[in-house]
Image 1: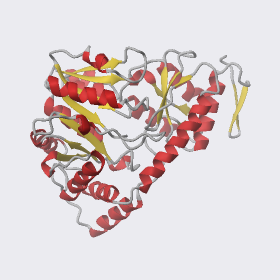
Image 2: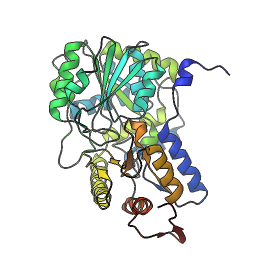
Image 3: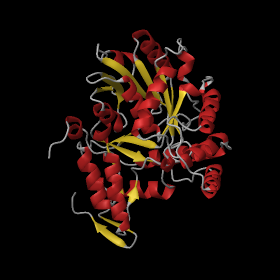
Image 4: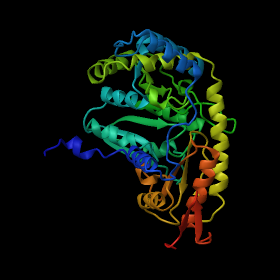
Length: 405
């Protein structure tokens, strides 16, 4: 069978593949603990669920405009004014089937084959593959000082005449690092001066800890005209625990949004009417669920950090936000894919290998689960790796005997 160059070059989504493996094991009754998930366990806001129920009962579920229904655009405009202090018009907004599609369509609208897209590493697994799907060249950049906090000079050193776009995801998936205000200010100014598109992936911007406040990229933009190449991506998936609803959005200049609308119209048409109605209700509703989720995640982060710091060999870096911890397990195994598979096979704990995020030897661990899942999951990992741990472990009524150390 002959496949296209793109078809052969794009790899499977490691996160989705591992989620599928864990689901199969759970269906077989295996006591899997999922520390790899990227979705909160809490329910969607009640306003969203009630809005969906009422809308479905009406029976009037039809096609939607390619760029989103007016009610959702109005809600996004209000959200942008409240959280970004930025007034935009409907023509500056497009709603998509998730923030992932928002980023993909934005890249399709601005990127030509062989042009480069820069993003700090570690990075979300889909960034390189999205760029490849358009025939572009992904350029991940590790901070020279070895931290998870890039500096402008790290990015600047990789800029070439082919650089078309920079993607910044802060707080970051997988590290949870919230980039400093100075860096955000510098990267906005740098992109304006160089005429480079800047995509701010703000999907986690309200899920931050330790009293930190969301940073607003517009505060540092000098060009607020329709020539601005600043693009802001957001959505309901993370902050409202509405991952399955698949609603994201893009704020950009009118020419960009028009091009994105044309692309999306041929690609998927408008997002589902049902999920757009739910998103409207969540954005316009009581926001207490967001703060409740944030507090839960902060508490879960603290518990995970305590457990990870309890055994030698693991270097855990305290996340500033999101629901991930990116920990260095290279003392035990430098090949993160092998380590992740080992932990799933031996103690039924699902983790995400760091190599998929651009840094081997690390594992991405999720704090989305319950306190019990976090504590028991880390306990199982410690038992599997730490030679000083007891030789036997009970998982439910099943006794495991360690024969590999």
